Amino acid sequence: MSDPPDFPELLTPWERLRQYTDARIALGRVGTSVPTAELLRFGQAHALARDAVQAELDGVALAEALPCNTLQVRSQAAHRSEYLRRPDLGRRLHPESARVLRAHRSDPAPDLLIMVSDGLSALAAQRQAAAVLHTLLPGLQAAGLRVAPVLIAGQARVALADEAAELLGVRLAIHLIGERPGLSSPDSLGAYLTYNPRSGTLDSARNCVSNIRPAGLDAGTAARRVLALTLQALRRGLSGVELKDTDGVLGEGPG
Image 1 (tube, rainbow, N blue to C red):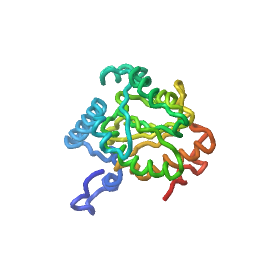
Image 2 (image 1 turned 90 degrees about the vertical axis):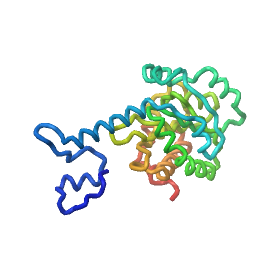
Image 3 (image 1 turned 135 degrees about the horizontal axis):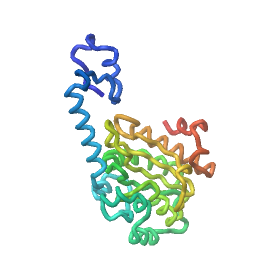
Image 4 (image 1 turned 45 degrees about the vertical axis):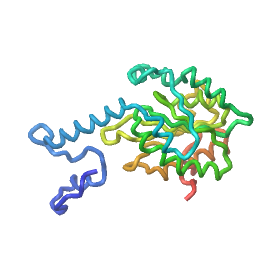
């Protein structure tokens, strides 16, 4: 959003709207082009989005910020360039990571798994994930749910949590992952929830809480929505297109 103007009474109606949105509206024009200041802002936003896509996740720093035990895993994509060119590799665990998870399987298995990963914006996971988990984990524990050690995953796509959850034998997976950056949101986090996650799970079987960032959906509200969805998914034994907002899910989180 724009900074407050020095003389608000001089603003046009379009310029007043700019105070309430990050959308690129009321840019003005000089002849057939946009003003230089707006062109420079666009270039800066585009550069921030590109940087967010290319950035690497600092798994050690993220683990230190999380209020729980963690395990580091990675996909089969060897580096960022391969990850961006081969989405399929980002959906499968590296064999060594799969071995680590098999070694951590327990009986009885935990109820759910949480994965935090870079996705298309490591910046989002680095900035937003800890705040979400500081609210979400106590809520899950208060509900009597057993949570596996949080997985921190590099070069990951959404489906990577399915294979990890299958190896650990959990009933539900929550994947906090960096979303594709927009020109005003390079650090937006998404939370994907999947009941009965397995390799090959369709996207239609997932629920998503998106745009988690200070300028979008704040971390506390997002965590409460994810918790409400989790409790509903476990109670009803499903997730995805059959678990809709009309069920009151998004309004039922703890206050």
